[in-house]
Image (cartoon, rainbow, N blue to C red; front, side, top):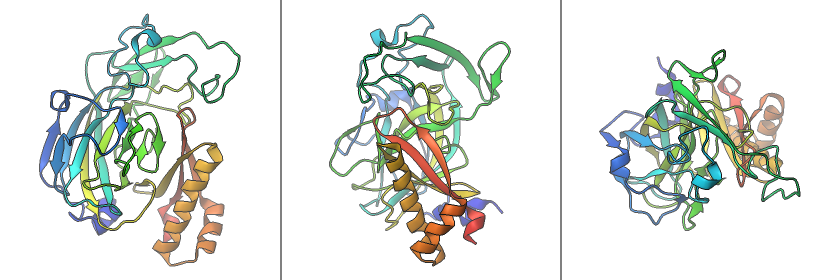
Length: 328
């Protein structure tokens, strides 16, 4: 029996995790892409809980970087980066609920070499930035284009990396703010956590009617931290299954896989992101298992794990997790 039948989505979802009507959002359907998460855009699609949606996404540069000789700063128009497909309106979603989004597949889309990474001026984990201001001169900008398919990431003639795709940016609308798609926060957004991958379910807090689900910024592979600030960015075709959990009540994104439960916190400094993620996980473990928060706190001290999503965005993202075998 698949673990999905015992997932939070199946146990608590309005559609009980059962796939319903199928929909598609192409690049042409989307038309105008969004660079903020907020409740002020018109939904591109309205769905019932249970819907399966195939979504075409742009890469983080909206396809502007095409050659290794390109100068990113001359081509990119900050802050119009990280284009998002959506929003998708989920019928019946109200504040206090959660959207359950099961990621079915992520496939690279477009002409090869489909993958792009680069060094950008004053952006990255080991350079001076606007938030960590120094007198050091920026590193020279550099572009690398990489061929990617579902069998691998062809980094060079002698090195093939695994294809480990995930959604870098996914979330719901804040209640009132319109916030840059470059920033992660309580609603999700640009978390860059590699666990948000096929085979996982992410539970996103609903802050406004319909939830307003946005997604984009798919990556073919990324190490912990997204160190230079740019993972292997790809345009993609993403298949997701959306359900609605009434009264879920979580304030931050929660992720479930076959083996673990994770909460994702985003903040600066980095330890505050870890504190948010672990606080949410402590509270959830206590509520789920019936033990006290003090006992859950001690349990996670023994077997909790932390995953660094990004250390380069306006806020840093970390996931705190526990293996399900410790919850029995």
